[in-house]
Image (cartoon, rainbow, N blue to C red; front, side):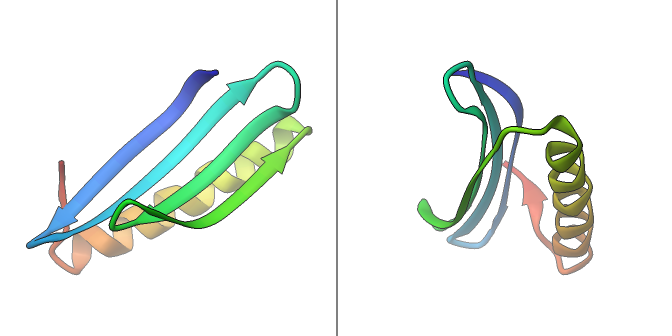
Length: 72
């Protein structure tokens, strides 16, 4: 799999990670992790849906940063 997007934020002992990976056999795999556990996972076959996920990740990351989270 090829990484399209990856960002991890930390606050004290907590982590939040956002991943989008390209998988030639299924399309794209979208994952969100909280403290190294998968909290959301989705497979996409259409790029416009991946773009929506990227926009959602950007909003969530910005909100976490406002709450004091920092890039790992």
